Image 1: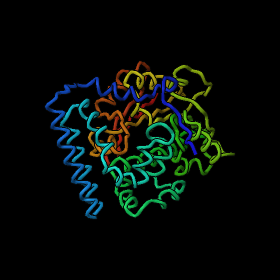
Image 2: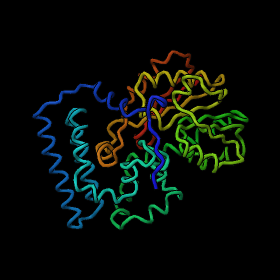
Image 3: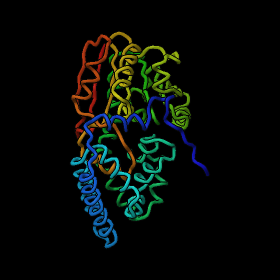
Length: 343
């Protein structure tokens, strides 16, 4: 059966090119010597990993060493050289072992046509919706999944979901009949963790996403509730193509990792305009140097725009809209940076 695919293009303003252009915008000296050295080091890393799998070495140890070595290599070469090396890694025979992990395989193959889709997050959430696929994994795949679902990035994603639910509950307690907007909502799993939603404290919760499969899933799962699933994108928001109204709380938790700074600034400004007086906007972005970028960008084929606290603050500083208060902070494991803006 042919998988439904959705292309991220000019319609969404989330593109593969935006991420590659972000990499090229940094200092990039693509030297022959560095490339050859990187290729040699990568070949050794992957060869040793393959040998370890072939000799049935402990899987956790294999994955820990592989992740650390890929990260070390990524950190020592330029972004352009790393892009070249990542492509080589993806073609190595060791992938036949790694792709037995349902999380790694789904991320690499992109059945929905783009990175970081809602079902990928369900693997990270260990959600019942993907339990059958996890159960079908080989014994080796299950062991690798035990490692990848506990990686720093996965822990940060689960923490992000719970933090979102907490923020929504706090807004609902402060503002009766609060209205909430989730941008790039995915399957809106945070709703399953929200006491405010379960107790009917929210007036409206709009879940906006450009993937019709995610929109359909949210519509079906939360039918008859205050949650309204809407098909839309960054472009439709910036172009004011939809009459969404105003909100007490707006958040974009899995989107800024794909946005060039100029687009991120414009989206932030637009979201602030859509807030009621005293309303809050929360953006989240994966933090740079959390230790798993190398594995994510090779065998998971999941490139992101990793940012520092200063990078996120730069987005906030460039916003041309009155902000009463702003806080840039990190989650407990440091894997995600959050900016909470109040108007």
